[in-house]
Image (cartoon, rainbow, N blue to C red; front, top):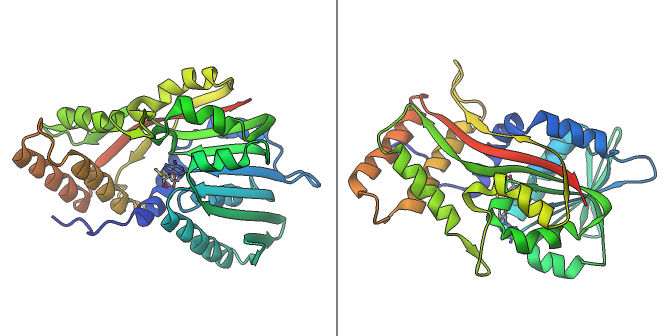
Length: 305
Ligand SMILES: C[S@@+](CC[C@H](N)C(=O)[O-])C[C@H]1O[C@@H](n2cnc3c(N)ncnc32)[C@H](O)[C@@H]1O
């Protein structure tokens, strides 16, 4: 088996960036651009991202010219992600030849037509909500590849309460019940059912999380939380080898996904260990041979409160 061990979560999130760039639903994104007046002079846009990981969404917004005058607050439970987000922002500014200063515990990113203050904090979402509710409000709330990890009926009302009245939410890459590999192997269907089962068994503070069908469930959960959806559409991950191989670091992304499935199903009583081991090893080899295709079905949402 030629998978690159040990796996790094931060490298996985970095490798995921190009996969996500392709996946994001362009119509939902266009509706976001129409709805949000990005950093009007005199009225900086206030952006909050929950579960921000290593800060790739901030980079994306700046790269696309979508956020150029405003503030960005990124929170994540994992302090290693937050530390990597800060390191990446320094590199990002250096590569783009932008000016980055550190003041009052925040970054100031300054360049031609760019004036953004960025703050990152390692904190649990529920603690953040409790601390900030009624204190601060944001214009735009982001949650990217995050809501399947959150207990939605408990988390959504609190998250949405951090938006100013009429503020916009942009919830992207919400997993929705399909994990597909090609070429097919005999165990695929059984593994998919068990793997999704591990997502559905996940509990946070004793509550079930969004789980394997977060995407479709969000329509109901958002409505129940008093939110209005104005755009929604698919944002499937589709990773395949082009004639020049996998783009960027996407081979690593695939190895990480296979390893995640491996770890989450290791010791499963409903799975015969030997054929499962063969499945895992064959999937890793397919990445090395540049044969593996991976598809995950996800949905993007845009709306307001
Ligand atoms: C799948 S990752 C996505 C990260 C990032 N949005 C991205 O797409 O690159 C989910 C992130 O949510 C964070 N997270 C999970 N539960 C959290 C919580 N209760 N509060 C804050 N962050 C949380 C994890 O640490 C992880 O970085």
